Length: 482
Ligand SMILES: Cc1ncc(COP(=O)(O)O)c(C=O)c1O
Image (cartoon, rainbow, N blue to C red; front, side, top):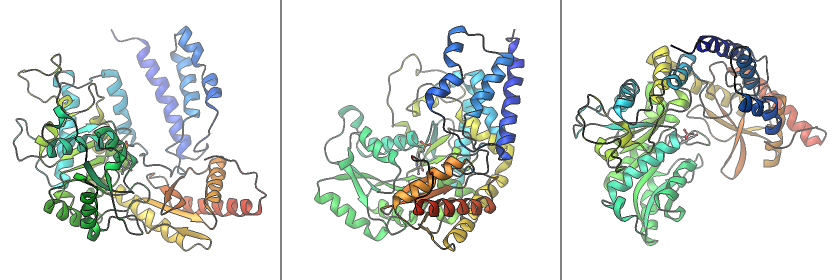
């Protein structure tokens, strides 16, 4: 029999969540409030509940309400900070279904439904780039993929596949000195982490020249290769951005693909943020050349409204991913007659959540067309924000956006930008991030929120201007940090 409290608890949690989302959407609470962690542990009474047990019913409702009061409110129209989706609420239910069923899906028999959804989601993504879908039985000509907990792990997985493909036997022998990869300095930090993990090291990253927007200069690729050779390095892969993390600019993928083909380099595209432009007919051209890459990653929890985390590693030839990991785990992987696939063979992770369901429920709730419209809407809003900010005296933008990321600063030094950000966060009406780009500190908007419109951005600029002048005058009681 089901735990009789389950239904009641479900209702309590649902009620608290509904209230939290409503209040957040209406901006009737601050978008974020940073309480000291020790106070929070006490306010939530964590030690008492851990000791006594018995949390449920009305107590659970109170606990969840308090917990939510200390959560950052992504549904608030002032949330414009990071590359994390405002989750579609049907998609959000995937977390509940998954946690209650716990189908950890390393092997098919531990999660037929999650495996089927993952198989479908991967093939849906392969279709968007124009690669043939995976098939049971593994025809040599098909694409392949696996879902991972995040783009960082997805990048690592793709680069392991690339290294194993370029250096047969490396899994047994380990890497030899000189193995390298090529990437722009604007690559996400997970690429340099992957280089550390892969045994290439930071010295094994050959930096690609970029233009003033941080995009790879294709004409300079031969120079980079010559530089690598002069240093005794042997690059096996090149990583391109689609788009870059700091400012959201796309590298020239078609030209990079041609260079990789003629130099026998694996082309990996970190499209964690920008692959969603594949859905939008008006923006797809930014990804021209992606179809000629060997692998790319695509995070559904960025622009596809999926709850965290749901990232995909996609490869043009599925066999390369099958060689990424070689394991002996006789308790899981053995000959068996089954009508499905063991995704655990392709994944660094052993047990894994049913992450495909997060992407799929959001996709199924909205449908492809509305999802594409939402990608377009957020990128159009970034253009509008750029026009508004660039035209405002005393403000400057880093680049004209190609995605939904807008970087800007007020007149003044880097320290002033950080003081302005801290003051804005302390007000609680807007939550923005910041980044270094081209040697300067910028304030950064990532426009993922369907509830944010140009009026919210105009109000943010008014606040920034006010805080900047107070700070310049030295009279502002501005919070530090940020
Ligand atoms: C281009 C790019 N790649 C990878 C990542 C890492 O993704 P995740 O946070 O899902 O690990 C990010 C995160 O913002 C990113 O912008």
